[in-house]
Amino acid sequence: MTDSVLAGCPRAVAAAGTAVPPLGRQMGPGLALLLSAPALVLRLAAELGRTAATLGLAAFALMVHRPLGARARLVPARGAAA
Image 1 (tube, one colour):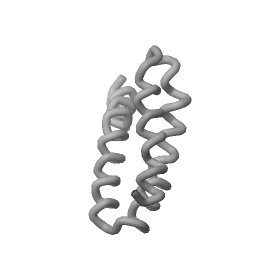
Image 2 (spheres, rainbow, N blue to C red; image 1 turned 120 degrees about the horizontal axis):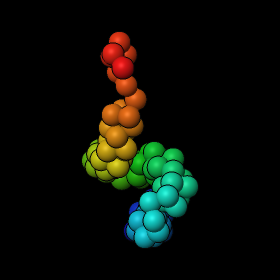
Image 3 (tube, rainbow, N blue to C red; image 1 turned 30 degrees about the vertical axis):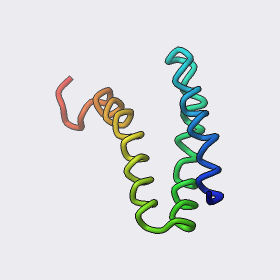
C-alpha cells in the first residue's frame, strides 16, 4: 500500500467516529476532517495518478455539497423580499 492510502485509513476511522456523537458535537471533528481532505486528495494524486484524484475530488464534493446547500437555504437570496 502507498503512504497516501495508509494515511487515509485512520482518517476513515475518524470519520466514522465523528458520526457517533450528537450533531452538536460533530462540528469540530467534522471541520478538521473537511479541512484535511484536500491535502489527502493531492497526496493521492501525486502517488496514484489522475483517476485516484478524480475519485477523491468526487468524494470531497459529495461530502460538502449537502452542508453548503443547507447553508444556502438559510441565507436569504439577494433582492428577495423579507
